Each structure stands twice: as C-alpha cells, then as structure tokens.
Image (tube, rainbow, N blue to C red; front, side, top):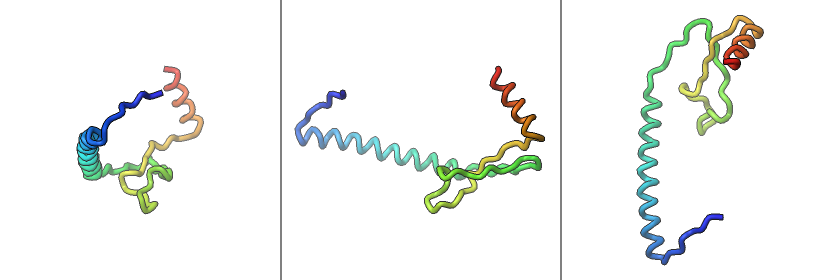
Length: 92
C-alpha cells in the first residue's frame, strides 16, 4: 500500500502547480512529436506488398483510418512458405 504525504492546502497547491507545469510540458512535447510523425514522407508501396486492414485501435477520432495508420506486409507466395519462414525465425 502506498504511503501518501499529507500536506496543508497551500503546500498541496504548490505541489499541484509543479505537477501541472510538467503536464503542460509533456503535452507540448507530445503535440510536437505528433506533428513530426504526421510530417513524415509517405512510402511508395511496390508491387508484391499487400495492405492489412487497420484495427479499431488505430482509427482516428472520427473512426476513419489515417494514412499513417496503414500497415503493409510483404506478400508471401504461400501460407506454408510464410509459416516455414516464421518457424525458422523463431528457432533462432
């Protein structure tokens, strides 16, 4: 069980202001990182790759898939070939 400090109201206000300043800085950093990620150039998808459908977790607020949420994989010639390759990778 966590043992929390007990402070006076003024001490709590001071501690909360310090945390609020850190939260605001975190928000600014997260917003900048989001902007940088959205500014990344798009990759041209060559023939032989197929697009996976996005899960509901990667959908935007309006339920629409953004361009950066698309996931692409290399198309394998057959299920058996893909399974064999995966098995080989797992074995080390």
